[in-house]
Length: 86
Image (cartoon, rainbow, N blue to C red; front, side, top):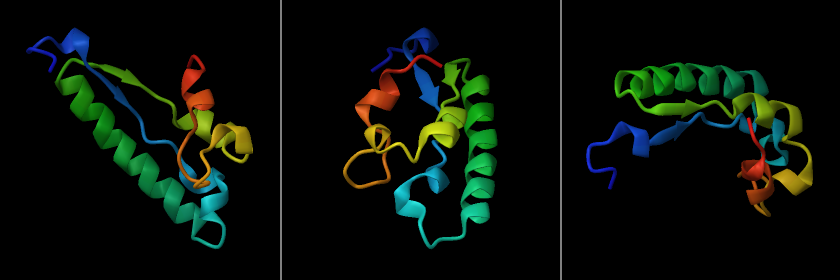
């Protein structure tokens, strides 16, 4: 779809769902550790491909429990969160 142009591609970091209502009762430290490990790889792949990387993980860690910022499944970020500039 990008027709070989890395300027037409961006990669988002994975939000930390530890801070959402969906994580209640789960191993919160493990969730955050795995998110961080994944995002290190995610960024390395984006850098190797020379595509823009947008780190939204910190935003999810400060605002995930705000129910306006997650969808009705209490896990995924809402359009409102994705509309913020990082």
